[in-house]
Length: 124
Image (cartoon, rainbow, N blue to C red; front, side, top):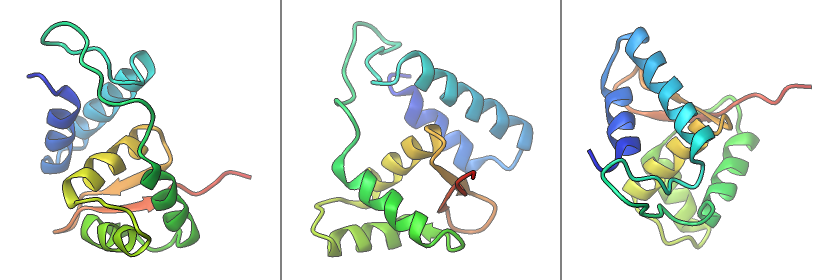
């Protein structure tokens, strides 16, 4: 498994077991803590995932924070980002949103028929 993050996200999205989801979320959190840049490749020498987060992630996070009570699908986020001038596709948005979930900025709802992302409420 060369891309453990993508594999873990796929398992997280497809399982309904809260135990399995908790374990996957914890592993993703540990991976982000240990290797935030994603430079450690379990299959061998480092293969950078990319420096920093894409510029569209900040815009998507701001969009979700402005609509905290409304979860958005990947398709909806992709269309909104495209309208803002970002050149993104559904797969890039899906993976990027999972990075925001890993960072604790966004939460994912996989209980329904469609994957939805929403902002984590800010603590005051």
